[in-house]
Length: 404
Image (cartoon, rainbow, N blue to C red):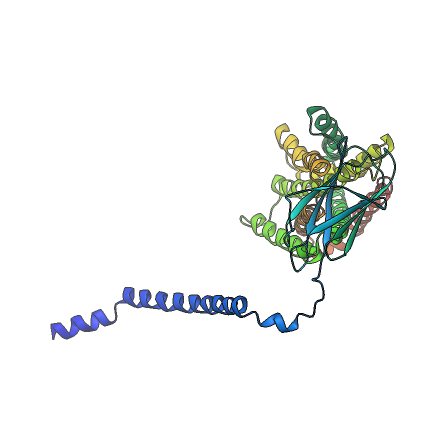
């Protein structure tokens, strides 16, 4: 009898059953991977596609990602996106063939990059056209609209770019936060107006960031699937920040202000990338009026950050941190954009910023409904609608000063 009981207990041992189940699961996980590996091996060894080859050249695609103009000539960074490795055979500048060096040399694999260096005596302020000819005869063109020296990596140029980034992003946010003491005396109606104004300015930034991200994505190499990348990055950013923000319930007060500053900061990072790249490439000249326009355009961002903390008394360090979080990325973006710009990474930064801004729009809207005590009716109240219109309208009008 004891032997029979022992045998039954051993047969129904839960640990052994779990181990056996794990082994079966692992087997069913490995089996499809083995089948895939065998299929690829067969495809490579037997080459069944040879009957479809009719002598036509492979599909080729070349994207220009960066241009550097210096005393040594012109250097362009290109990325291959064809079905086969590409070989650069000749390079034309202004319809004349020029000697060139390639780094690294040899065929450029799909997704890989290479520097093409030309000892071309470019002319300051002039336009130049570059054509790259591959060994199959395909040509890929790139235009330098205005030839200007690419900023050098030295402390002086970085300092000047930092000053510009501060005026574009940091100074206006700090000025907007300085309205905090004057706004603390507003009643519930004024509070609802300011929160709705925050939603309005964030809604404008969301549309603006998404539009710029999609435009830059169209300039990136096809293999990055730019438009899909933008949608996926924005969605992932939104969902991730929603999950983080809701760990301890709906954010309010300083936590909500921090999320607003983060969303604006990510937007300013992408904006700084685009500005730095435009000025470095000579696509735009910098004027005092343009800097003033950026300052006016971004002042409302500071007011929006201050709105959720009007009934609190945060320490001075909190305001400094919020200003740096929202405006500081503009400095970083301008540095990166002027020295190492690539359209796909700028599009990615703007997409992440758009997702973060959408998360803040949702949270500020919920905060408005909770703080007013009237639920959904708070969003369509006259004061809220006026604030929403004021936020969008101010951002739209001031954007007219900075669009070039």
